[in-house]
Amino acid sequence: MSKILILNGAQPYEFAPGRLNATLADRARDRLTAQGHDVRLTTVAEGFDVEAEVENHRWADTVIMQFPVNWMGVPWSFKKYMDEVYTAGMDGRLCAGDGRTSETPKSNYGMGGTLTGTRYMISATFNAPSEAFDDPAEPFFEGMSMDDLLRPVHLNAKFFDMKPLPSFGAFDVMKDPQVEADLRRFDAHLDSVFAEADHVAA
Image (tube, rainbow, N blue to C red; front, side, top):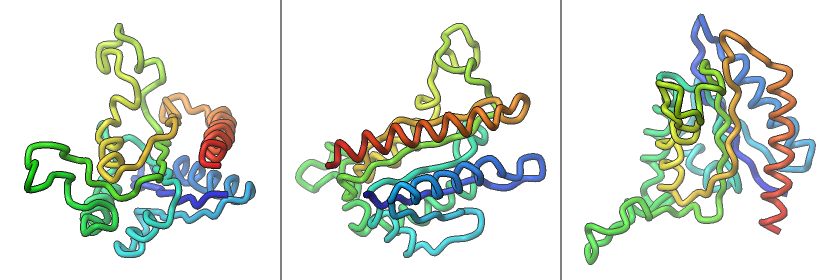
């Protein structure tokens, strides 16, 4: 079975203490551990050791990024984690520079990643309802998908040559939460994604 790093990137606030993201991160850890995977969980808001997290990325076959979408991106504490951990890993452990060479200084930007073979999965929670996405008639996202919105997170992973697994979203979690249904969907998503991913890896 595979080695899985789960990052709980929630930033607790009084109006949103992060219980759902903690539940999803813990649920993924427990479910995947029970299936025989080797799982590590980092709760970013509780603090982290930069060097240990670089090595966690090098150790992992799969990285699950669990976070609430705050102002169209990741929470500030998760961005701080990325800034510190990913920058430290630019010494060759996560990437060898930005992919360009002195011979071709204008080509292949972003293609210097060294985590070849590592997969990642985004699991995000939204205040927005699912109906706000994938519909050109909706005026705010104008047909964008959740993955379109989270393109910078995908590009960060691509910078290290990680390959995407299907994303999971829990929607309308503030005004119309459907927690039990979301948890059932999450379980099914994990089972499907990791059964298929492990089959491909085998």
